[in-house]
Image (cartoon, rainbow, N blue to C red; front, side, top):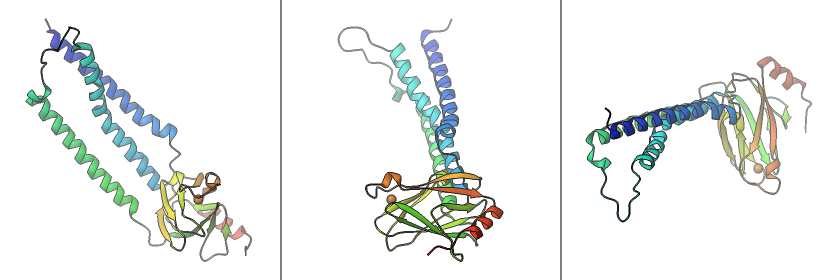
Length: 243
Ligand SMILES: [Cu+2]
C-alpha cells in the first residue's frame, strides 16, 4: 500500500507535468498568434529567443504553481491555535541539490543564448548594405535612397539584402520602429543614428514612432513593403523626382 505522503507527492508530480505541458504549449502558440509577423533575421531571432525562454520558464513556473496547489490540498492546517511545525524544504538535501543544479543549468543556458543573440543582432554582416536615410518630423516619416533621386513617404525594401538605416529628426526626438523587423532606434535632431536589419519575408510591414513626440504621435506611422529585388529596382526608377 502506498503511504498518503507518497500519494500526495505523486499528485504534485503530475500537476507539475501537466502545468509544464500547458506552459510549453502556450509558449509555442501565444507569440505566433499575437506578435506581429516576423519579417527579418532580427525579428526571427527575437521570436525564437522569446519562445525558447518561455519554454525554459514553463517548468519553473509550473513547479511554483504545483507546489502552491500541493500545499493547499495536503498541508492545510484546520485546527485551532498555532499550527505544529511542518517538514522544511531546507532540510531535504536531495531537493536542494536538484533545485540548485536545475536553476544553474537554466541560468547559464539563458545567459549564453542571450549573449549570442545580442551579438548576432547588433552585428552587421554585409559589406554592401542598402543605405536608406530616414527623417522623422512631427508627425511623418520620410525615406530617401542615397545615389538616387527618390524621396518617399513609403518604405520599400528589397528582400534578403541587409539595409542600413541612417536615422535623424528635424524637430524633437522620435523613435524609428520597424515593428515587423524587430528593430528600433531613436531619431534625434542633429545626430544620425544607424540600425541594420535584413528583411527576409515578402509583404507589408508597419513603421511606427515609439517615442511620445507631441499631439499626433499616435498617428506617426508609415507603410513599408518588402519586395523582390527586381520589383525594388522598378519601383525606384518609377518614382517621380521630388524637390
Ligand atoms: Cu514621433
